[in-house]
Structure formats: structure tokens, C-alpha cells
Image (tube, rainbow, N blue to C red; front, side, top):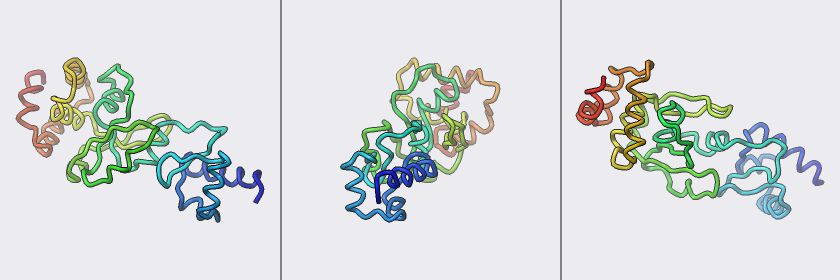
Length: 203
């Protein structure tokens, strides 16, 4: 197979997979382990993390959001990433903060790019207050604004005071907030008392 055919096949694969493809995708095209090593050595593809690749030089740049969607479909945008999305923060996040099942493999996050900061939690905490967001041209899972504030209260000790206060003030001023849903989420997240103490006075 010549280089031109290699590139055509791989460009089609990249388009179909959103720019990130797996070892199994390459195997389906007939590439053996040796063939994949050859593609890497010739800088036709590059490894993002074990078993995940992208074109070394692509005519179409793959956005960070698309890579997050491909690599972490089970992750839920949370904390500063979600605060920025809802405009409860004006600080552009330097890393992608996502919530994951606490039993997920930690090795998944050993990658050079994109930068991911995982928040681990029980699986039942990932089953409520989750919606979707259009982010840089793709759809990602994200905590709804009411659930997000519950997370801020839960992780208050990990947030700087300015970011925390701005998040609460942004939520309180948001006409799309849903206080009954906030209290429902807070009950499930076991932070109802803290939510009432921290935010109840403003609602």
C-alpha cells in the first residue's frame, strides 16, 4: 500500500471518527501491529494515549472539545469548566475538569494533551443532574446549573474564595436557575444542609 493510499484511508477514518481513532479502527482497515508502528515511525499518525491516535498533520484541526468527546464519552463537564460554560466564571479554564465514576481506570488520564483533571465519585452521583452542552462544535455531557452549584458547595474547600463567591452569585442572578431542582439535587448529593446554609439566604 503506497503512502497516498495510506493517507486517503486515514483521512477518511479521521473524518468519520472526529479526528481521534483507536487501534481497533486501524485493525479494521487491515493494519497490523507492525503496520501501525510503521505509520508512527513515518509520522503519518501519532499516539495520543495507549490505543488512541490521530493524524500527525491534519488539514482539519481537531478541537480540544472533539478530542474530549472521543476520549472520554463517559465524562461529565464540571467545576471550573462548567462554570465557564454557564458564565458563572470569566476565567478561561487551563484544564478540562470532568466527573467520572470512581472505579474508572486512572491510567486513562495519563496523556500529554488535552489536559484533564478528573473528579471521581460514586456511579449514582453521575445519574442525575446531567444534561448536554454544545461546545466547540460537538456535544458533551455537563452537569446542569443546579447540580453544578451542588458540586461547588461539595468541593468548596478546593475552590478559591473568589471563584466560589462568583459561582454562587452567578447562579443566584441566573433567571434559568431552578430552586426546587437545586434542593432535589442537593438532597441526592447529601449537601442539602450546606446548600441551605451557603445559598438559601440569597434565594
